[in-house]
Image 1 (cartoon, protein in one colour):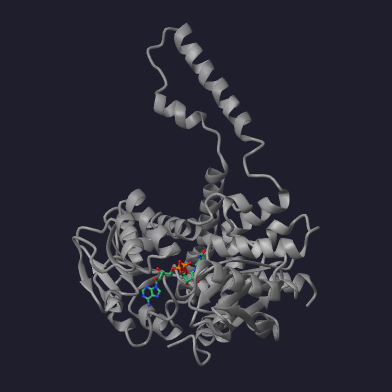
Image 2 (tube, rainbow, N blue to C red):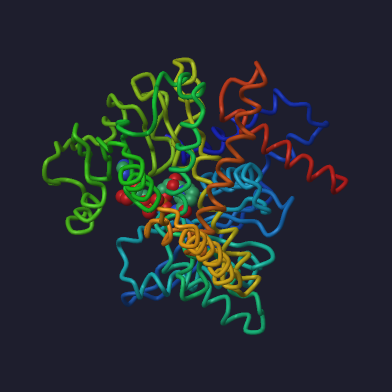
Length: 475
Ligand code: NAD
């Protein structure tokens, strides 16, 4: 398994090297971009339940070619230096690919968050944040964390509050972290953003008949059989949107306690509710249950969405994966060795550095919102509505004056007259970003015979942009 013994970083680096081999970078530049600039390890004690507990946390900065650097903070027992460094490097490539003006970073705390009460987690989080803030490893201009596995809005709000307590005169203090609740300076649409981005990525893929055919598929997302691993933030939103808005059939869901399957498709929101009540997917009515969840990765389906953790598709099971299309909602779910096996078999992989970039994209919007101190759409919304109203009034006046027998439907008027609020603008910006990044990646994939897959193409686009940034700095 990766995550230990340097495996995850080695896997990301192998994919990076594959792309670099097809590029013409100046001497030494490939190495400079590949290496992780710095990783800070902190061990701190918190008095809890009558004794001092020592925790280990990390914040890794992969590349500062743009600042601030950006990347989530993960709470999990598997967190180690190799994992945060691999994830930090992925952040660098991801930000470059979707053109968010950040370098890559990542943080992690080795903790099982389910073992602690909320007030205990708050004390642990505040202490971890304190250690990072005092070294400028959380700072609106230098390093801006976000949620990742095991963390969410609540943890981000604690981190933000801790920063503001320690930097009372920093007018941009709210921008020290993204993924905050709305009432603490967050942005509409951030919670759903990564899952929404996965949906937009799939929609964009299905706009290209040549790409669909290459995966051996046809038609649209409607009716496609989907298997999702991990019904957390990313997996739940992606699955729910694909089911409700695109007509996909979510046939299989894999969670920690096992997997459920229904040929007719599962009602994702109900499965999510069931998980909240029962702590797992087992016992969900109308579905078959298999304790060996990972086996369902190998099920017959059209689209596989690993949305839980890294290295779940490896040398040991890659040859048995039947899905012709895999979209990496999680970071690093396919090892480099498995990637080669799948590629030889003609499986199309929409790679993590693109597929799950919705989170950092909307985090970018949140950061900009915090720095500009105004909600998106606040100035324009009513002006836009007033202009639309003018047009509707004029059309109705004309139709009456000339006795033309048509009217605008109420539905049309309602939709047309409504000015875009923050959520609409965020979704529009995210959609535009996902389409543009797919276009950039696809152009390289389609135009160069030596580029075998979307992942290599994505790396080439990202590395070229980072290289240009270093060159512009005179390095
Ligand atoms: P999360 O903690 O909200 O959800 C993870 C889910 O996976 C949970 O439901 C958990 O029970 C399940 N899970 C854990 N181990 C499992 C296993 N062995 N088998 C099946 N299910 C398992 O985390 P998340 O924020 O949704 O992140 C998931 C992945 O997406 C991670 O790789 C993360 O780095 C990546 N990601 C997250 C974001 C974000 O905005 N949250 C952004 C980009 C990438």
